[in-house]
Image (cartoon, rainbow, N blue to C red; front, side, top):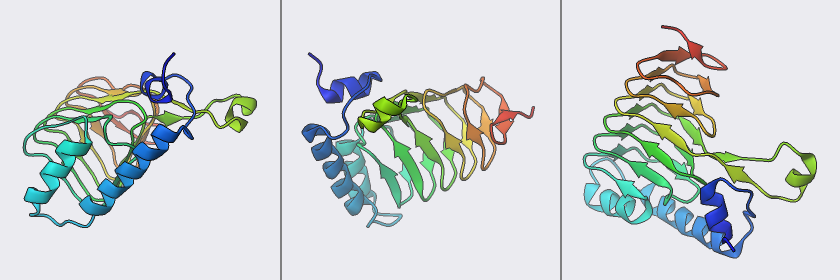
Length: 182
């Protein structure tokens, strides 16, 4: 029998009120309270916090505070990634961010989703889908990446875009919903 955490990470329906998941979210909130109280230059504080709470963190990663996560342990970031102020990563499933990716302020990356069936929603169950972001991607400020999306290497996501579908490598998309612009 799978735990609620295993169900969550596998993208199955799960109960977010599970005591272990509630404890995990509280741990993440304590981590965020500490991290978000730091400033640029506090690498001696920031890097160990990220290493402790993320699934993986590459070298030369810069994440401007404040930022927000559900759990943290489902986030995997490769080398030379920059994430600007105010980003939100709802990581009920894996979020992988490739090397040399630049993420603008206020970007929201959502793996969390809810059932379309009203009775299932009323029961309080949820599910998620992983998000994979390739290398050397540029995501403009206030873009939203929805559950299950993959973004290919060297793609550009225009500021304010809502990405509802996969983005091919080397493609520029913008708008709501995001569409290829070149």
